[in-house]
Length: 260
Image (tube, rainbow, N blue to C red; front, side, top):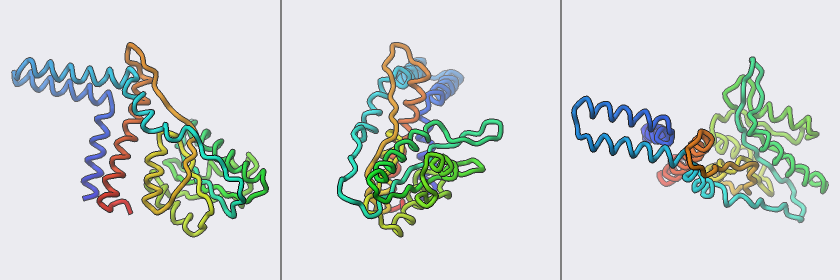
């Protein structure tokens, strides 16, 4: 059952990709023409594909989705003045790039790192203990958690305050494997650091495992409404549409009890 649903959601994600929509429209039109089917139907398919690509590429759809995904996280929660016994900051990996066989964190990871460090520094400045849990293996030879850890140490975070969860390959596993560590630590406050567009799904998955993280969005994306479609709008709209599909998947799996 879960395997079939996973496959269906993968297919659904394809329909958020502008190039796939264009390819699909061309294939359908070619098949209809070959079978001498209704000319009006072919025109309808063509117009539908063009309209969808325009809405994805001119920034209008992206603007709507951007607000849905991120507006709740624009204002970050303030750190409480009351002493916290053991606050924990969970930061999710943002990807790794490999150039000339040298692996470095993706640019998106650095905004997450800065936000996590700012939180950590705020606690340490008030002489309060605080730890950072880095979650993510990634697809490189060196885990995201390890690369994050190296940079945090360069920023002055001692090794004793860094915890590495280096097995997870996706957001679901981020939440699942991190929750096992978090439940053992029983932190007084739990912060979750990731990108704004990624936060809604991340929070939902952490809540699935009985956690109540305080969201701290590190960066935000948006589109610009333009007369002519462009690749910038198409790329970010595609990213956000995939997140919406991912949120639907989490909600469905939770309702079916399949996310544990």
